[in-house]
Each structure stands twice: as C-alpha cells, then as structure tokens.
Length: 146
Image 1 (tube, one colour):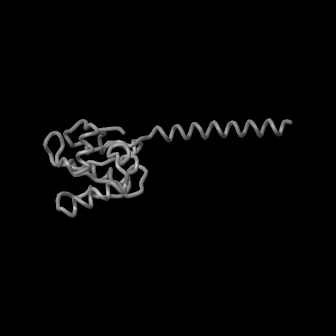
Image 2 (cartoon, one colour):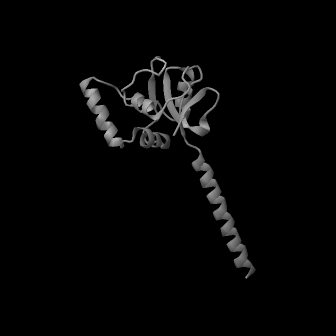
Image 3 (cartoon, helix red, strand yellow):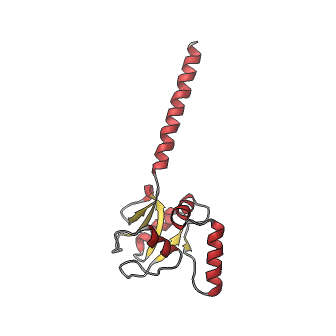
C-alpha cells in the first residue's frame, strides 16, 4: 500500500510541476521591437499590419521603416502571422507573389532567428522586427505586445 501511495504522490507532483512549467512557458509572448534609438514609442496592430504588408513605408514619425521576418517555420513567425497578419502562409505567398510580379512590392527580409533579428534591429533605427518577449534586452524597445 505504501508503494502505491508514493507512486501516486510522485505522479501528482510530476503533473503539477508539468502544469506550472507549461503555464510559465505560455506567459512568454511575441513582441514587436525597434532600436532604442528609434523615436517611436508604440504602434497599433493596424500600423504593424500595414508595415508588414508593404502598405506603409514609414514609421508614424515619418522615418523610413524596413520590416524583417524571422525564418520560415519559427514559432514566433507563426504567432506573428496569425495574430497580426491574420493570413495563412499560402495566402501570404500568393499576396507577395502578385506584388513582386507586378513590381509593386517586396516582402519583409527574412533574417533568421530571434537573436539575429534582435541584433539587426538593435543596430538600425529603421528596422522593425518581432521576437519572443523573453529575448528583450537593452538593445531594443517594445512597441507592441501580441
């Protein structure tokens, strides 16, 4: 009987620990960031959408904006696409193919993982990107949280 009680206690403790870890991991979210030297302090969802869909070429303060994407398949990219762009990957591919073909636009530059994006954005006030909130440091500032 004691072995069964210890086994049940172990399973319960393990389940509770797993739940706590899962909820902690889900607290980290995706944030839209710019360099700390960028004068803008916030953007709304529509402004970000327009930047990433090539409809806006400047920040609200008038400075040129260059959006960068994380690599295809990254969890942050998928979360950003679903939350901000609200389009499937195939819809985005079709959209950009049409704009490229007609010479009316180019998609955001794909620049690697969150670490690469953060490094690029931190060094250039005209870049905008998205990273996991846990990756934010003093080189970037958050303009929007998903």
